[in-house]
Amino acid sequence: MGRGKERDSGASQPTSAADVLAFCADNDVRFVRLWFTDLLGQLKSFSINASELEDAFEGGMGFDGSSITGFNPIEESDMIALPDPSTFRLLPWRPEDEKRVARMICDVRVPGGDPYEGDPRWILRRAIERAEEMGFTPFNVGPELEFFYFKSANPEGGVPEVLDEGGYFDLTTLDAGSDVRRETVLALEQLGIHVEYTHHEVGPSQHEVDMRYKDALSMADDCMTYRITVKEYAMKYGWHATFMPKPLQGENGSGMHVHQSLSRDGRNAFYDPDDQYFLSDTAKSFIAGQLRHAREISPLFAQWVNSYKRLVPGYEAPVYLAWSRRNRSALIRVPLYHPGKEETTRVELRSPDPACNPYLCFAGMLHAGLEGIEKGYELPEPMEQNLYHLTPEERHREGIEQLPSTLGEAIDIAADSELVLRVLGEHAFNRFVEIKRKEWDDYRVRVTPYEIEQFLPIL
Image 1: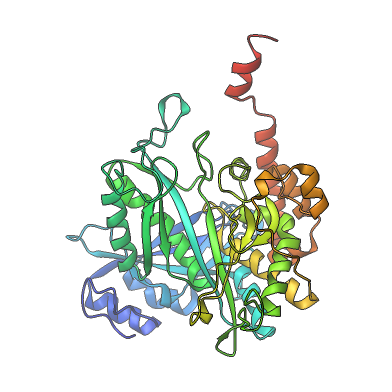
Image 2 (image 1 turned 90 degrees about the vertical axis):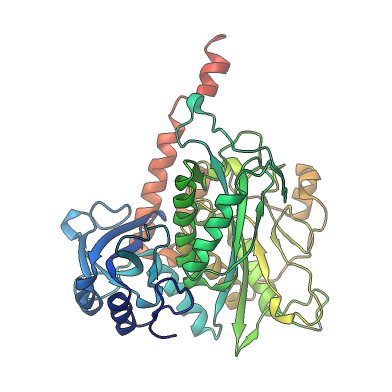
């Protein structure tokens, strides 16, 4: 791909610093927003004039990291945002009659140019490097992010007001989000994100837009772009879009099922035509690694107190550590193999939610799987029955563990995990554990409306 000559061409995206400079000159781009992500997965941004791009590419743009969640304290706060020219995209929600506004995603560096160890993008890069050292590239992921549209971000009475009462795959007047969802998909395509399909989800006013799989780093970038795009177009209609895992009592929460595969020498390393499940030894050990370490990495894919309101039996969210080919109550599902589709052999982890930091989530998943491959973990037999229907005694006999039930439990397990320390690195590990423990403590001591309603009249 080279220089883009058309103002609205999504097909001619710049890929190098020289391409970006030429594109901005040819297409009246005045401002470029530099995006990066804090430790908890919140998108951060500052804008520069396009005339500053040469300096930005040469040495990055300095900023104060002391107010960024999870970054260094004030005495070590100097940071540098180094833009990745391959992520340059025009922002489709900016007015057409103004000078164009673009964005680039940045790697965060420290003075001197070394990667900042608390940068989530760097944390995922290190996980990918481990896979490459073991002979696997790329690590492809295909996440399915679900979300809700509500009428307001601050509902009266504390109960979000839905836009429709539609259900799974509904295509009726009940689906009030169809138009904004279509506009969102068109915007994602302008941003270089291939959307495979989109539909109404199970819950009222709940939706899903599925992106085509790609390498994990690019997909983590796309997840960040996806979330802000969904929110921008909801706001255009006067609505609020949320990726909160469990916003409605008694309804399905929002998940982010992640399909994964590893390649070696240009071929899918998970496929074996002679295996009864068509899974290679590599795939089996990868699955076994994720099952064994799921409790440890739980705060990386379910990182908020609200995440554990979703991870309960009865709402299609996985709780029990088992794998299956058809059973969606299992933590990991292996979609059925179709003859002639060997390259689609993949593993679906069903526990992540869309409010996670995708860089940390993908890094944790990859490290857990690689741990299984490196140490030769053995895969137990699949569990094809509905795990929600088993009694605790039956699950115990089968040796089936379950995910942590609260963020407090999850972070205590992670704090003792050598694997999570390896995933995050010492600096990010200590900051993440500290921040998450504070979140749990703040939540744990809070008096809720439930307690007032249930206990104030009788105690």
